[in-house]
Image 1 (spheres, rainbow, N blue to C red):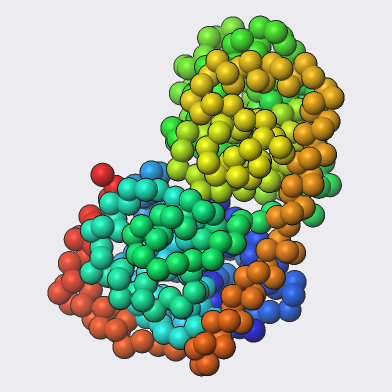
Image 2 (tube, rainbow, N blue to C red):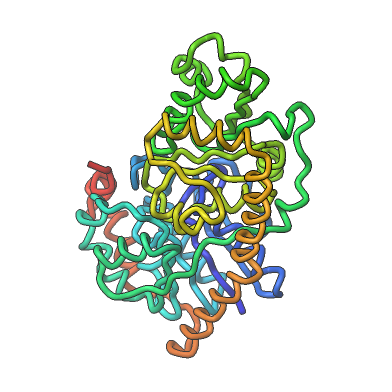
Length: 401
């Protein structure tokens, strides 16, 4: 099968949607399918051989975060050329309502189109303000996938209809044999992975909890992995603890797996805006116990605490006491380690990709033809180039409240 996949966000910037698309693409390739991913990127050297560059990106507030996206006439031309050259049997759009090549591809194509919704943001200002573009496009998506019940609810609230839930997956083989970092003690390291400058990732909750933990475990290290300003983080905790905090910044996928393999416990103190919890599965696949805030998405992945320990969201005191309890209880950590490995195996991409292929086959049988160009896409391109469709209006409509 020839499968065209559209990634809405910059490939060179780490994120859950990009990781999902990378894992899906590589799983499909391993099964013998042809895959090409259209994705924007500001660093073409970061693209794998199966990807096509949609152009450089700009940063815009979107879905409670800062997303690096591409949405302009140049992206429209590249997307249309990609569709013509691809001769795809299936077009798979991710976040088809985001200001990105996903929207452009939906406007430019018709035929067997699948859309995957990742967002669980209940208030999507962009969607409300772009109905004149989004509604005709969404009607062309034959099958909709949501990565969680939360993402499904968000999609239905905005568009109606229905979606099949197929969760995110984890490529267990990439994590289970990861080698620990040489400078960290597996028995004395607490790990955080995520953007340090994004409040909803909750690093400030973790930092507020750590003095109590450091006082009881003076040899403990806190390893922070992810982009962000070190000086801004250190301002949030007493200087006497600075020597116990290590920063790794942005790391590759392989290095991230090694970070997980180096940790005694992985802490996910997120405050909201999560539709799944792929990072929890990555930690569990390496055999690292998970301590996570009790967001609905995290509770679902951890089965209400059967596969990891939960604490009240945004409660630094409970996080501290839960972390101290786990660090003292080696038997509990060993139980969570085995439970986590079992849970990660349930979400291995070798299983998840089969569910997505079933959707592809169903869509192909309904549509009966390959992906082809839609004249409405040509019309949109002409309007943007002539200025009759105001690009500033389109861009401003996607800015969050």
